[in-house]
Image (cartoon, rainbow, N blue to C red):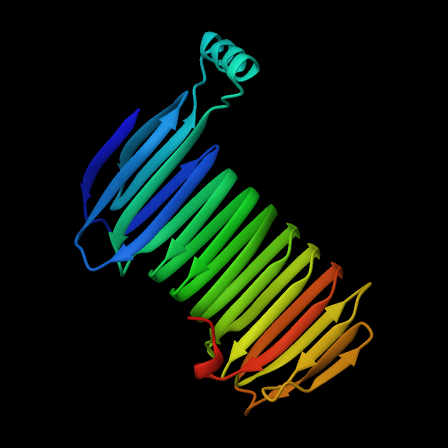
Length: 245
């Protein structure tokens, strides 16, 4: 089933899908456009206060579950969605993908992102980013703002400039963390319980520590905490011209 709908501008957007791909693109527009397809799922839209709520969820009636399982066993077609959202560039966003792929591009505002299993990519975004990842790999590039990222199992690759007004946190229970910091001005504390911490300066010089490292980059106005129980941590200093596009 193909869907193509346009919704008026709201102060915030909340969207969740049970399985599939979700692409969210910020543009110079004043409405929210939804396109894509889904199979053996239900698409719903509604409002809570001044917030637009969208969802693409599994069918819940028992005979629809039987049909979904039969379709999967015979055709290997599990219920899934592939949604593309075009939203205003300035948008407060809350996105939840239980299983699949999520990409967010070109958003400015408050962002809360949750992915169960799969992969998440956030690029060219500005603002406050909070991420919770159960079993997903995470890539953040060309970011500017403050972050609070936690992953149970999965690697985290961060590239961007961190604001100094609040404490930034990047943590993984079992995963490798790479933080490429653009023009950093902060104090950092990095702990890898069973791995090592590597510091890479802008000229490429490396310094290794066994399990923990802390120090100051720039004037130390901001704060960054990095932690992983199983995995390594790399902190790299880069300039604007060397940051990812």
